[in-house]
Image (cartoon, rainbow, N blue to C red; front, side, top):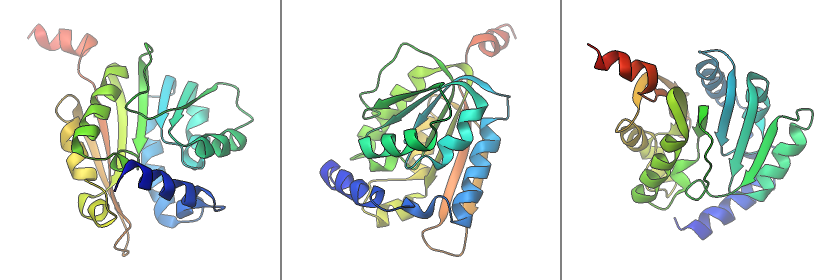
Length: 209
């Protein structure tokens, strides 16, 4: 699937009231519950990054756990819908940008990226986006990744899904926890993984042994 086709698909999906049934699906609520639990495992985040906000369902859950939250999405419609939904909070920054091109000197202590990377054109672009995300994650801090599995994403016309991307993240991050969310539906099957970035105090401690 080309980038233009992906953008057209997202535009169509964002035009409806509850895209992807994020507010009404039991499967989505199960997925969000696992992501939220992993996100708050180490307490509230001083500075968090959410990549891909859809219509703001998870952003609304994540915002109270962060002192500062940056939300990045390639679709202006997604940013606008999420901004309206989370208007009671003033600590959220908004960036309309492709994750491959998003750049900041800030180091985040929590990054959440779910159901996003399979929209990239191929595994090469996914790898580049992952390197970019890892560079923005502070040492000893957490990245939460979630995605439909490879077989489902490929059936949807995408290059790859969860298993492929998890292997790429494992090249530079340490996998701490994995959860499998699924139902009887052939399209409701995803993996959620909590990663830690080695470095800082833990790296120095390991070096001393």
